Image (cartoon, rainbow, N blue to C red; front, side, top):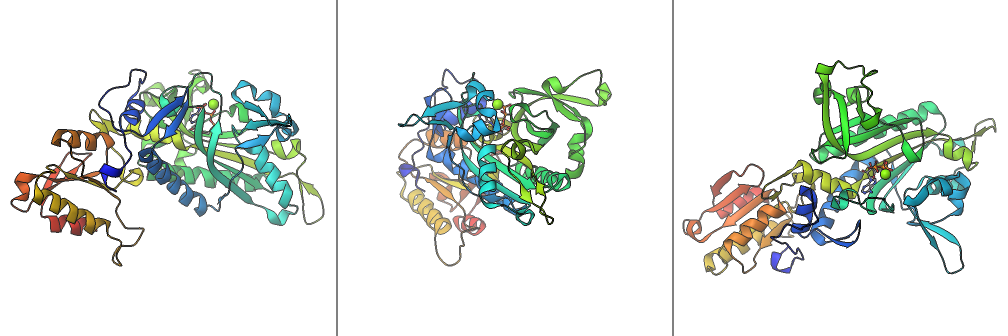
Length: 429
Ligand code: ATP
Ligand code: MG
């Protein structure tokens, strides 16, 4: 991609209404723009990151046989009347009427629809277990939207729904999802802290929230310091709770072994048994023709919130520092002196070589390159590159290029290595 053609409206100004680093940096780097309170346009740079995050989620969901589909964003109200949640959900639900006066709503979550899809097709125990998921927009009319996309009203969520024949099956599905979540967040360069949660509006009786440590988080976490060295299995049982779930009188961890930190909730998993299957009278027949109400769970990840959470945990005073797995591009080439012919020629050569679609590059290993060919000052280019936070920068400047040298800079460490253009090409191709 040529930066001169790329729609990333960066800005030097710190927006007045933005309070936390991720919100400021997402606005300044041209990732998002507010359309209304808690509702944002997602510009191309941000969509590239959303797609990377969604890609990782998809791979880890497929591994546990959770299958992607789409429920709908607009739902008929009658399903929610059946489950009893239409009134109970309250003002966070955006209610709509169609031209015939029918009641609809914009999905805040999809348990009812998942249960409805299940009952349309699965009539026998042979259809179990089943797990379906989507990555789709949600709307919740939050009382206090804030911190940009961290707490929006419209936001992108991954939501999965599992169906099992009995409690043992449901528990196994829950554990599989738990492990998949740990892997998913680790692949994004994050350290997830699973906290035992109560299940709030969705209702249930086994539940974990996945939190990311950040000073700007809305939750206060209390956890056993052993958590920092725990294996994935141990994470499931080590003590960790958030907010009002912490009670100093009943806390099993002595004070000197208890960590207290702020966290951002990026995922939430629930087991809620037969709550929806019974309410909506959804059952399958077992081998003997007996009715069995499937045991269900639901599993959310805040995909759009994750972008903000990743930036909160990975930035410096100059801008974003993307973990490689979710970066919008793998590397950026900065032609520092666009008027210099040699700089232009070498930058273009490196770009063409790394970006080429010939037989030697295949889609999975091919690097995504942003070539900054804009006719602007050195200072502006360097500042934008640090702001946008692509992991590797190739600097092509008029002095070094006389000796056939370009610089490779690591955005995270700031380390610069000099090498020939050929060597750079070899490294990234
Ligand atoms: P919160 O306590 O932050 O309101 P929740 O318990 O209401 O979250 P869930 O219903 O479990 O959230 O939704 C699953 C995930 O969706 C959450 O873990 C969070 O990452 C994300 N999420 C929830 N509400 C929002 C929002 N308003 N804006 C952005 N992401 C959200
Ligand atoms: Mg909420």
